[in-house]
Length: 218
Length: 128
Figure 1 (cartoon, chains in turn green, orange):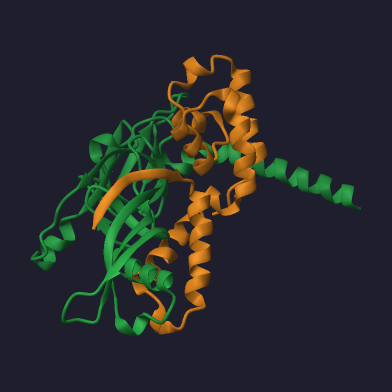
Figure 2 (cartoon, each protein chain N blue to C red; figure 1 turned 30 degrees about the vertical axis):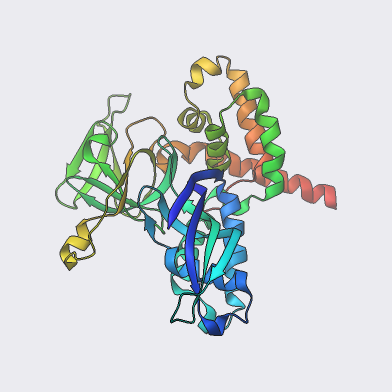
């Protein structure tokens, strides 16, 4: 999910900041500029990891700012293609599901990439997976409604260069970074579909372990 | 701004979480004028996500312990990263993260051994 990227930028330090710790000031300026922002073709910047090099500083004629070229490493959110990620369903429409990982919400699983066979329920605007039962009973409806935790596999990263003069409405639909995913494979989809039984077993095992430790301790 | 190298290395979720915990502490100690609002938001949200993931119960030691133990299974780098981040605890999980599981792990014993190696080293994820 996360990578380290090596970046270079020029930072202006105000005269009144010259007396304080240079590293701190530079880190703060870089975080102000980049934290929580998407860099085209790179990913979503989380925060500055460390500063590798601070170049010579120079002062332009007519101003008091001191400018330095800084090489630094940044923690960037950039899933690789085929990476499996857990996320929460936040939106559901006929086109597909919108997922969120709290700090990034532009993850989209198109309808054709939902587990087969999938059905859209107009009533609640929710998708369910029609899971065929073996013993002749009617198929189970496994819902993927908002709030559920699901797993998806990253299929594509899309970057778009957005013009600054977008209207409010355009800003809502246009995304500078979007992750496309799929849920059509064994193990993908709601976490509960696949893990329920095993987790219970594990919980029992853990309890036993704890009891053993207690008896040993006493 | 220029990108000198897009990917210097990959980070596990645990590494990101512990780094963000340190950043949070540092920010809390600053006077309010020195804080960066954007940073606070993204740190809070990322931490919130990671704290409900298997990374929350991991530490550097358990990962360093696990990685050499995975060597005999010949996982790729990306697969090892996924194993650490997701902590697969059953065969379905492994099949999801490891490509062509059946060809690479033809015997069930081998697969079981991989799962126990992972679950023995990495603590169970936090309960939701």
